[in-house]
Image (cartoon, rainbow, N blue to C red):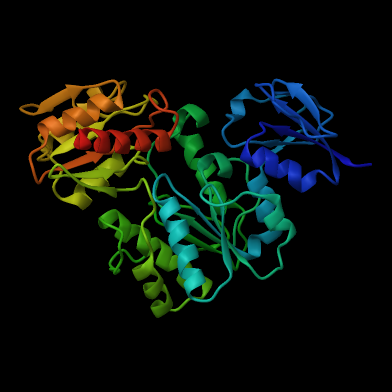
Amino acid sequence: MNQKIAIAGFGIEGHAVYEYFKDSADIHIFDEHSLDAVPDGVTFHQGLVISGEFPVVYKSPGIPTSKLVLESPDTRIATFMDVALEKVRDRAIGVTGTKGKSTISALMQHTLEGAGRDSVLFGNIGIADAETLRKDDGKKTYVFELSSYQCEHLRHSPHIAVFNNFFPEHLSHHGSLDKYREAKLNIARFQNTGDYFVNGTDIATNFAGTMISPDLSLTFETKLMGEHNQHNCAVAYAALIAYGLTDQEIRTGFQTFEPLPYRLESVGLHKGINFYDDSLATVPEATMASIEALGRVDTLILGGENRGISFEPFARYLATTGIKTFIVFPDTGPLMVTGVSDRTIVPVTIMEQAVRAAYENTPEGGTVLLSNASPSFNLFKDYKDKSAQYRRWITEIADA
């Protein structure tokens, strides 16, 4: 008889679980929302109450574990990322961290390919499909980017695990900073002797894999801006050395890597003003790193959804900068400029207002940085929507 499995949430990873198990399991989908279409042979259940008849439920990353109601303590929570790691862990490099994990993952995959290694990006930044696993030839290297949501229920760790950095984030999902940290640490918790853990944080562990601290004194020629990206390069370098690449192979790859979009990306010169898009900066530490990388920021666009993080240290930092104009979105923008004096502070609620204020308050030759230091789901669909609106209004106002 086919195994009986539950899938909680039917997004990208829920579909991947279905595709992977559809020929070998009796599949039941659980979701808070109705589905436009249910695959043939699948049973749909409204809600997230999982009965004891299911030995395992595969949870989509975006669903907080607290929303699942398991009627049996024997029902195990799993994820598609764990399915993938179980199959390819000996050829896997996994990357997590509050910030920088996408850049590090893409940088390593680019460098591996340039050095002649067949590799694929998998997980949060890359693909998450069953077909790649089914067609795996046993030779490909997998570079996993793993969010805390994806790490939370891992029971397998990659051969080379990378933990880049750690700041308060996603507390509404995990419930506490301790639980967020423990979720991240799952990336190395299940390693064996012979595995490697590149730890870019100051969090101490006693896992089985050999821990490697990146050499932060190294410098790299790269198109990536800022000291934080030198840190990212040092972490990636340590992981690739552990993988077996040479110093020259790595440095060659780093030189040709193009920065990812939405991460301190130049939008160009418009009406004599330099605009930068840092839409993926959702914590203060990321915004601080971008300010330092640019060197000169005249106008900073801040604020978004409040997830319970204290902004007092960030507000003190902003007061020490030379930024002349702060354009602040609700809910967190006003909190970030508490104590900032003798500057221009412009409250806004929509992106058109923000960009118009930037044009009005930034001198010719100056720099405008969109770097919200908060998620923006209270104002935009996601960071891509926020970026698209920013770029649209930069162009439309300049053309007018």
